[in-house]
Image 1 (tube, rainbow, N blue to C red):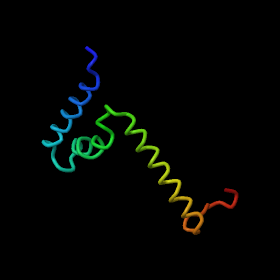
Image 2: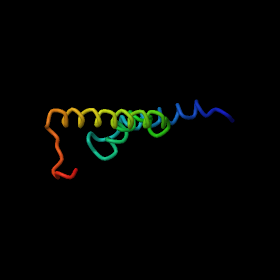
Image 3: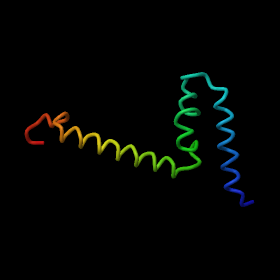
Length: 79
């Protein structure tokens, strides 16, 4: 009927409610309480994309700093 935004909100809330009944650190717990909350349980793909970009940026910065300070270096002279 055209209520896509409201349907997404309902599905996200349904996942949040289910999260209350998951066993701590069990397989389901990781999805419903850790990953799912950060990416909108798959209903907000923009959040997953933004989180992915953030992780790539963080990795780039950390490895660049490690290279500059000679903490991370190539194991092969040709690299």
